[in-house]
Length: 111
Image (cartoon, rainbow, N blue to C red; front, side):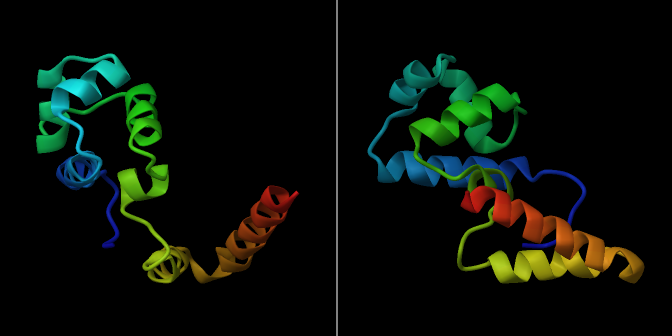
């Protein structure tokens, strides 16, 4: 995953479409499940429309996708690279704080 300040809506749409097709769902059926129009699903899949957090969350839930993967393309096979890129993007004097925050978050989720 390359570092960017903006979301890549075309890639989000591709990941969404790939999973929808894998699940053998039509755009019409997905649109019913997430309560939007079929044309809006098509726009999201083509990356020509920006959807709300609520809609992207519904899509992830219906398609059983992790939000990190759907939105950012982060999965278990590239998480080390992704976090390495994030760590390298932080000024050196703040890296330990970043690592401490990550460790605290991980410990919170373990509970």
